[in-house]
Image (cartoon, rainbow, N blue to C red; front, side):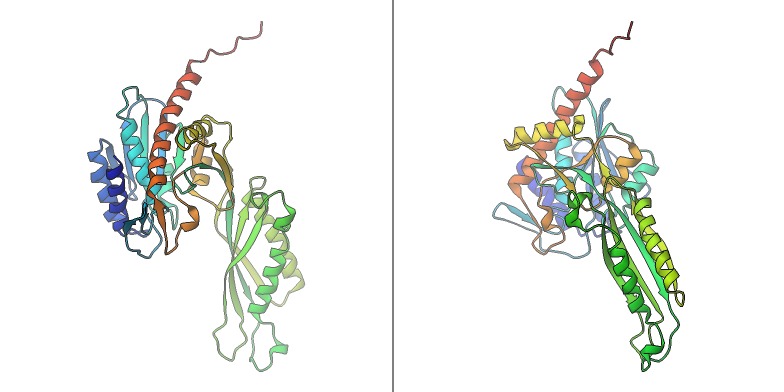
Length: 378
């Protein structure tokens, strides 16, 4: 199976699949997963959904088939597989597919595993949003993203993307003291928003801090006219003790105060995107099963991670209200880099961890179902 595992991943890496151009890789997955025994369907946005087994529990393994734009040479060298998507996230996706196929061959296997290969994770999360819209159901879910074979991601911060447009009266750039420069005023407002949230170093951890990052600032035409309009985009990250509405309210208060003290210009704000933070209970059966499997395969205790980024886990976890984690082989620091690669040994370990986790989850689920209800008080 290790030779097949390497071939499957290298074949996936050779298919260029940036967001919105996943048709070729989805057709390949349909053919490959059918050969492995999956019942296959494609949904309305192009997600490939494979089912294997029957009954309860239903375990969802979800990975994405798209990458960011840009190609890298695919090669296997020194126990490493190189290529765009090797860790983010074709490596975890291939590992999930193989693990589900292997576990279905176990004589004691009685459950249903659903492997969803979704589109546009790197762009709009269109794939996972469509899974929710079309009513996918499961008892447990694992997202396949590179956490490292010995790590489990149990939490992600939320995000809030706001757009602010600031307009001022304009004049000739030879008399800048007579007019307000929209770019300068926008940057002044940005600094006030940035300072509205406590510094990261004064928080319990970066995971528990609201952070603000200016990700785009555009205005002016590069001519002799003082810029009269400036647009800026700000990325705010939302910790689990907050909601995106609370974080937005703080920014909105700063904007209102700024507008009151700068009546000559106008300020408009719009929310472009938002996702709530999500953190799974670390004592859930899913975290316990995955921790057990990592210890069994890696011979070391699992490390639980809480990340400052935002993932599809946030969207699905909140919508379905079920235990969900992110796990996968690979070093996330190699995401989107020119040196993206995955260790073959870690990739194979990831397959085994997924397999052992499915079996352990089935065991824990059966034990929970067979427990006698507590006696009613007399």
